[in-house]
Amino acid sequence: MKETLVKVTINGKEVAKEIESRWLLSDFLRDNLGLTGTHVGCEHGVCGACTVLINGEPVRSCLMLAVQADGCQVETVESLARADGSFNHIQQAFANNHALQCGFCTPGFLMSLKSFMENNPTLPTDEEIREAISGNLCRCTGYSNIIKAVKEAYALNC
Amino acid sequence: MKPPKFSYLRPNDLAEALDLLAEYGEDAKIMSGGQSLIPLLNMRLSTPRYIIDIGRVKELHGIKEEEDAIVIGGMTRHVDVEKSELIKEKCPLLTEGIRWVGHTQIRSRGTIGGSIAHADPSAELPCILTALRGEIVVASKEDEFTLTPEEFFLSYLLTSLEPDQLIKGIRFPKLNKNSGYAFEEVARRHGDFALVEVAAVINLDKDGKVAEAQIALGGANAVPFVPLETEEFLIGKEPNETILKEAATLQLEDLDPEGDIHGSKEYRRYLTGVLLQRALHTAVKRAREGVVV
Ligand SMILES: Cc1cc2nc3c(=O)[nH]c(=O)nc-3n(C[C@H](O)[C@H](O)[C@H](O)COP(=O)(O)OP(=O)(O)OC[C@H]3O[C@@H](n4cnc5c(N)ncnc54)[C@H](O)[C@@H]3O)c2cc1C
Ligand code: FES
Ligand code: FES
Image (cartoon, rainbow over all chains, first blue to last red):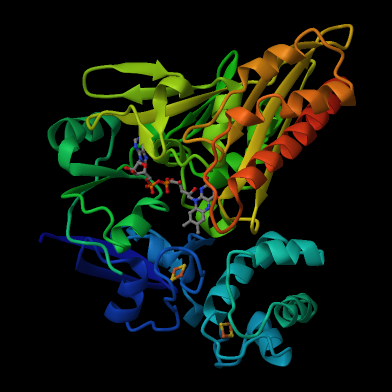
């Protein structure tokens, strides 16, 4: 099968590779680039664990071919921590509020929330936070602590 | 759960896309946002030899205003429609309904053309387009023409589109003066496909009587259903709550929803009546206020 060249900027670094066009972006990130922070749960768009940012917008990486990301800026959970390795405000708020248990869903929540917080700079209502995380499923923590964490993330970001 | 092998074709303009469709259409699948097609590939429910990715076909992107309609390019994403001030002002039913399509992460890739072509009877856009009596602009190498929703949607996930054709754009008629609109839906969770949904537009004459009624019911039948008798019943009447209630249940027997674990046939019929009454109420209220919010 003919390979296709993809050139993408991933977490600020340019990457150019010839790959099979059937590769999903999620598999390209994990298996080809070793960025295993992006998790794959359902591989049909339902769970949100694989959420990454494409040109700043949240996208399911299991519902995008890697070749479709050609020319795009991709951000994964690996881009969140600060340069010294410490957590950013959303990660810290998750840790402080017990907003994760097994952590499988967490990368997806963090990436969805990064985009949401950038687009909604002032503290949203509980209802709006619920709506913002409605595309991400968590099977162990429950959502109350995640909502608490989002509110603290706003406070930490001031 | 990985896509099967296929050859990937990525045209840069419309002429190239239509050439590829004319040559490979029978064995190819068009890919726009991929939000319905990639799950089908991942589950190997679809195994096309060719994927024609129309993402870079610039003629298919964008939102244009014409005299009586808003024309949206097939490749325009849900999120761009959701955020469009022009659409909010001229075609607010679309703004209200599109928020029900999946989640933010789906709307950032999913497209208007893809939603219409996929023809899911529970999807929001086919229902809205049917209520508005809009049109689908179809292009092939040979010609370009428009189809009504009635001509386009044949059955569950089935349309009259031929293998060498694509959806170039969709025409959504603008909301008239003295008209009100409403979209109502019940889904198990927000972001899921609808159990049932209703889109309605009501136009009032200067005496406050119904001059025109346009309704579509989604999720109940294999294609969006237009309750013609209900529309006719409303015309010329003063739309008070008694009349709206009567109208809302007039044609429930014509609905044939599939019952499943999430709701029986009877429940879905009943629910459609409840949502239709609510939608009519809101549409009339908005028409009276003359508000286009
Ligand atoms: C978790 C999840 C939840 C969802 N929830 C909803 C929901 O609540 N409501 C809803 O309406 N949708 C929902 N969707 C589906 C989503 O809206 C899809 O984006 C949409 O149905 C298809 O659009 P697409 O651009 O992704 O098309 P694709 O997946 O690329 O294509 C879908 C089909 O249309 C054909 N096609 C695409 N573009 C064209 C064109 N221009 N001309 C001719 N044929 C074309 C393709 O060949 C394919 O057969 C959901 C999807 C997911 C994964
Ligand atoms: S793995 Fe992508 S949404 Fe579940
Ligand atoms: S923390 Fe385990 S699934 Fe969310």
